[in-house]
Length: 244
Ligand code: U2P
Image 1: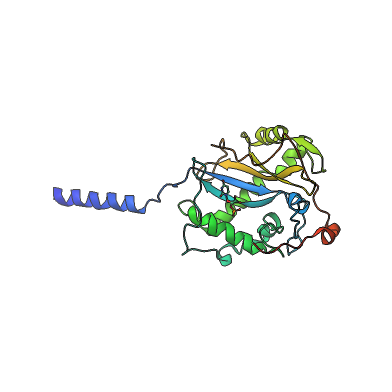
Image 2: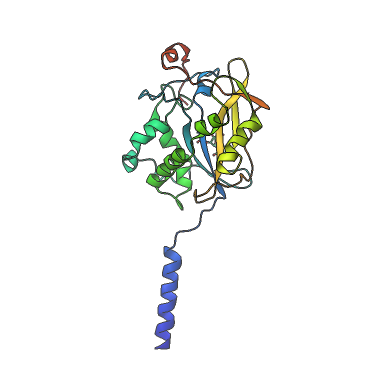
């Protein structure tokens, strides 16, 4: 009898061990958004989103798992590639907040960016997300963190003017508790400008955390906040770039 109880206990214990999801094997997330205006006034030029969403706002780039040593996993699972039918209820919102402005392909192709983000980053975070929850989480953070309003509230506007890099970081720190990383690119004259904002999340993407390291990429102490391209000027400023 005692033997049966011990065996049953061991079987039960192994069932619990095997059925509980494994913890994330990466250390934190970058949640990255980009400013389309910084693509359009760069040498490369831009392509407006195919569905014509030119809302003047930050756009989602993606949610990227990161290791503390500055490296990151990528393209982890070829067996669960992007399948738009798994996110069909989110497409409407994604078309507004996660549009492609020609950084990755031109003519821009919105599904290509979504596909790339899931295949490259999402497949490495399946201990935390399935396809639907990966995209939903991005949209939830986009709704929660209105970067344009946060910056405007501190007088930082997309007016083509120069703003202190620290001023921009502090405005965001004031709103979410932690300073973000800022990535700059250059306009056609070589002026450093606000391109991408990196916000750090814990490895379950539940809360903001202090960035273990900050990807301060090629900025100056004062950077330009480019204007958002006007819809009618897009046709003139478009430069044709090949697909990437
Ligand atoms: O830098 C090129 C691309 O590599 C991915 N990246 C970069 C830095 C980093 O810390 N973590 C990371 O994942 C990004 O991938 P993408 O989705 O754009 O292909 C980044 O743009």
